[in-house]
Image (cartoon, rainbow, N blue to C red; front, side):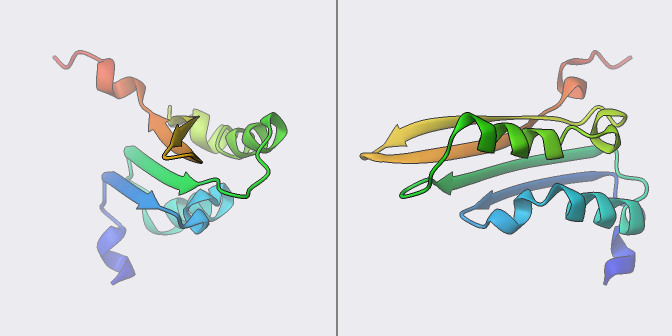
Amino acid sequence: MINLFKNLQVLSISTSMDNEYMNAQRWENLIITHMPHLRIFDIQHKTSLFGAVINSKTCQDLMNRFATLFWTKRKWFFTHQHYYLERSKHGFFFSIQPYRYETRS
């Protein structure tokens, strides 16, 4: 089944509450090894931060892991937001892709 990904060009993933998807090194290895033709990596990850200690350093560490040369040379960029919903804090990590705003000829 993994061979099906060899020609994959667009990967769009939406996840919730599973922080395994936030492992930048694992994504790098998977993409290099099994998705060499990937052009678009679009991820949206929501999580509840109930009881979690989240500070600016924690968020910056996550952002740094997704800002290595591997990600930037492909022009794959990411950001995060925190918000309150029904008295609990939530986080949203997602890709921001420049290609979405480019004009195609």
